[in-house]
Length: 386
Ligand SMILES: *[C@@H]1O[C@H](CO)[C@@H](O)[C@H](O)[C@H]1NC(C)=O
Ligand SMILES: *[C@@H]1O[C@H](CO)[C@@H](O)[C@H](O)[C@H]1NC(C)=O
Ligand SMILES: *[C@@H]1O[C@H](CO)[C@@H](O)[C@H](O)[C@H]1NC(C)=O
Ligand SMILES: *[C@@H]1O[C@H](CO)[C@@H](O)[C@H](O)[C@H]1NC(C)=O
Ligand SMILES: CC(=O)N[C@H]1CO[C@H](CO)[C@@H](O)[C@@H]1O
Image 1 (cartoon, rainbow, N blue to C red):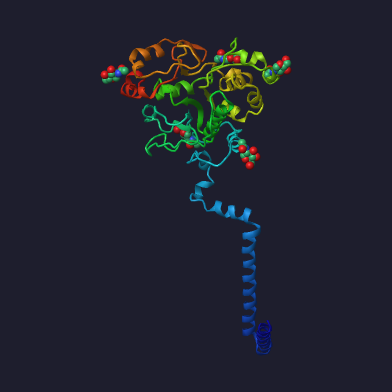
Image 2: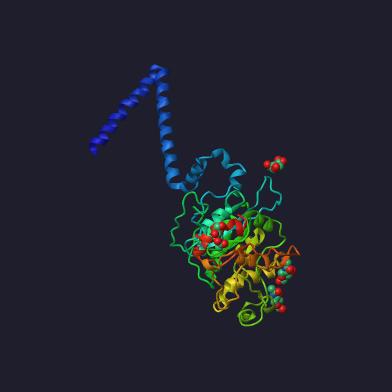
């Protein structure tokens, strides 16, 4: 300690000597002296500010620096960067955060760019998509007019090839159980993820057992020209209809407003946001519609019939066969697939489309076993025109 002090004292002495001598000898040395002191102040100041960035301002300063280092600096400020859909579907938002982000709506209704409206096909699956090759053929040549989202069991590892339209289209998923609120949660999660792409205008829910019954052009025209969204919604008496209503749901839902409908819906962007943002009906259904009340058959039909009855076609676009009876609709296998079968589905129908009688009522059908893939692929152009 003493020796160090001594050194300092020694160092101090010559410098004072220099100052004195510089004072006596004239300006050049004095300028050097001044510059050295200035340099010292600069070093101290810059070290101080580095310290501040690191320990005090880290939360504010560091992200600001990183955000300016985006690879596409020029585009980051253009409208293009708002329009472009997220390149990766995986994210770390939880449902609360995701739904909040998905609920953003532009107040100015005219888009200042050419927006090409897309159909979002949302696949609610357990794991694999056995009908994927048929869907691939269906989508081929229509890039830019559709987007795909898949919700599967969180443990499922998809193995789609890089060239597949299904590659990288998995959204962060959670376990969904039939007839329970977790199923509606999964559907809302699909809608919310699809809403993040502002070009998605129509949202179609499909399962792994679904197939398209028409070619892409027909489906696109049917949805884009419709005045209504296609969600099954009817008032049914008896134990499987009104019998599932719980009086605790009033006053949000009264018995006369209780609706039932197929889970497989198509909604437009407005109704998709209504579903994602709902916090009025959700708690009632979660609490008072539990098996044997199958919430996925009642929540959206009832809620939308109360809020926006004038926007609903009250019918589903997905054909299904309940004629065999029982709790589940019929599943078709290889032996069922022939021209007569699809003639029966496609030609024997009557419904209303934009308030006019129509014979084109179904765009999708279920349930098809994996064994049907081969005959369907082989004859898709004959059956469905693609
Ligand atoms: C999501 O995270 C936010 C912030 O941590 C939290 O308030 C919210 O409860 C979370 N939501 C869910 C569904 O976990
Ligand atoms: C949109 O397209 C039309 C015709 O294709 C063109 O006249 C118009 O300038 C385009 N608008 C923008 C904002 O790109
Ligand atoms: C249900 O009935 C109550 C009392 O008649 C009424 O105040 C309420 O608005 C009704 N709910 C709906 C959704 O119409
Ligand atoms: C669907 O049903 C609602 C009543 O729940 C009705 O107001 C609406 O007009 C119906 N839609 C069509 C297209 O008939
Ligand atoms: C189920 C079905 O119609 N299969 C037909 C598909 O097409 C091939 C070739 O045209 C026919 O041989 C099959 O009978």
